[in-house]
Image (cartoon, rainbow, N blue to C red; front, top):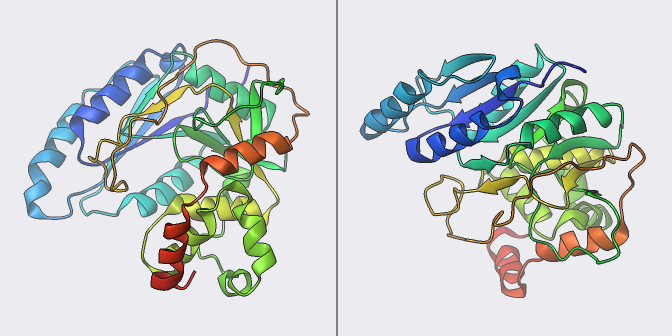
Length: 297
């Protein structure tokens, strides 16, 4: 068996969410065999110093893992820069990685699932990332597998490999080319109607997202993300407490499933699953109009 993939955990200013995330991870069967790297972002302003200190006091006492390494940023980098820099740093030392933010609950076999997926699909050039999360899509009744492939990366309880992360284009150098090519934009949106608007907003400086650029990098390489049919991750940050959510929702990861998953090495994308997945990320007509008027996209 290969060594367990290291875990990278990003945290900021939510000590209660963070504690739930860590307790959940500590209950995983592979926790004691896994190295944990924690990246603690710095305060945006002086008033946040107290809550940041509370987070750092907590992480300094975390145990239950093979080793715990902590990086504390004196300044606020923001999530996108933190993730890109942190994941890149850990992948300079390890062949693969499992990544979480401070608002993820996991099943006790989440790490086992992720390690198995990272092992089985390491050499698949058409799979750039794996995740333990799945959105609440309508899975076709005749779908026969425990996993599925879609043209989108998940940012919730995910993992990747060093040789694939190295192919990411964080600058989106050919943005103007895809902007002027309607057919390519349509292809990119195969993973959800929201993908092209998010990429355009990223390049316009409206949002700062590593995840949309990672999904675009997968698209450039004709690659997919691997998802479980039944989620092993639940997001607890959609309560309005996070910096990247402006809404509250109770529908993210209500169902989490323990238990082994069959991982066929020759798994291929399924058209019905891709349609169901894209339907979940369909944008309302009025939002499409708003994007067109406000952002020209």
